[in-house]
Length: 392
Image (cartoon, rainbow, N blue to C red; front, side, top):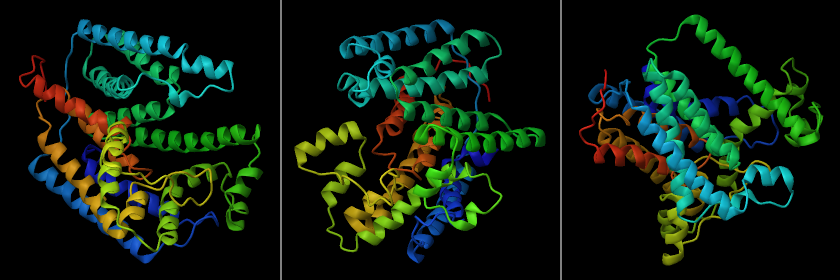
């Protein structure tokens, strides 16, 4: 399962997959993909794959088992809950409860400034770390699972769906790193589970949009082609198709709608290459402005891969520069993160998630993932000689 251990391979797989899905052409929403965008995705994926092969040869990523005392985990989780309790008191309520009890509550304003981004990103990092411990230890499984559930409850309580999804995706990558080979039977179950999840995603989408299981309205707003409507494919799959392929559609639309580029280098540097909670503060000081919106195909499709805003600011040069930055961040992170560290697998799992979600939006700017990458490095260098027993 070396493929799923390597973030460079994840980039290549993710963008080639979204390109393949886009080419199914189930919707009339999407413009034709330009030759230059097609070539960029193809060449960038090839370059990323080559870099992955170089990492495999000279610094291969290997899964490691770790051990950790329950007492240490208990103290950390108690501290996490105490800090969230402080935020709940400051907020005069738990976001989930407030949302259920009132229509006017805005959950996006939750949290104490400065503390909140650090606390949420640390919680996500620590959740993945605890999951890795569960996979590593043969004893005290029940206690560890309870701790993991307690950590997973937090994004639900603060109504942070993105945080919850990111945690699950990082779990997946850590799990795939932990197995050497997937048996045919497990592959079959994984495929069936994946198809079922995509189908249920469509069913739930219909209920959220129109209050019942009817596909008619979403097929209309997504401009489903007659060929798809008349096919034997369950119409619930249109939801998954739109949400997977629309970032590429929005990117293509952004390229078409922005023929004149103003080359805003300062805006690019301070709004596209820094985590959001830093960018928002520094941008005010240097008078840098982030692109408010990309050119969407429709109002409910909001993301346009990591490259849309880069194109608006710097044109194709911005797209190429962003690709280089992503590759450099990934390359140096793998090189710098100590392989003997107890946080190594956690860091690589989060890095794979970072690469995967770049197909949707800029994960450097989104501190919910990018700032998580700081903790494995920070704690590795604080504890250069870990006392943990690490097995290879």
